[in-house]
Image (cartoon, rainbow, N blue to C red; front, side, top):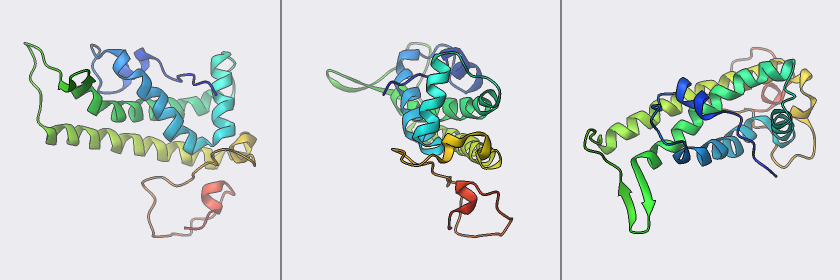
Length: 179
């Protein structure tokens, strides 16, 4: 199946800590990876493909617009997170090389890990918001719980824990699953 990037270069550079001078070619494939690996895991294959087709055909309207307002920030931060190691070092014919210039110095490995953890925290927060939103309005998106999917929506997020507080159930995948 095709992959339609749901965010633009402008969107990711305006809404994440990635600088405006970052070469988009270094993060383009990571936008696709973030969508295929992480977003599809949240939405499930059926809703994920439906959103991609509508986005490609520029037919995102109504409830889909609201859903995209949750999807786009998540994809942007997840793409920034998974891009970070490849912005520091790049794979070339001679092996892995660290990129540098006359005006900039590279930070150490621990700072890169800190930045990656910060981006991960933000993307996990945005993933939780997306899952919560889908749980509240799952009836508006019948494809969210469609049977026979390649990837069935994963209602759990990194913020889930083994502690359970009975807050009621809205009937969505996450609320009706056993923790």
